[in-house]
Image (cartoon, rainbow, N blue to C red; front, side, top):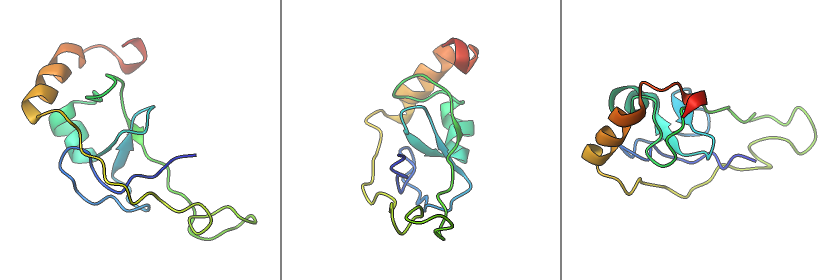
Length: 102
């Protein structure tokens, strides 16, 4: 089950559970759409994979026990260990390779 992390790992922008601009990689590294496009160039600085929109967990339990109330989002903020310069250099190496071929 997704943690639904609360922030962009690059710029630390708040990304609440309902944020439509939250993007994740296959390991759930979480970034805002602006950072994914402008800095990361659709390359996760941690795994090298691509990004997709983070799903939104339902607020209302339309099925018993299945909602944000029952499986709350994480409060654990994560910040990448890489500098913007390191991220840009890494992204430049693989950005032209399709994510499914990285």
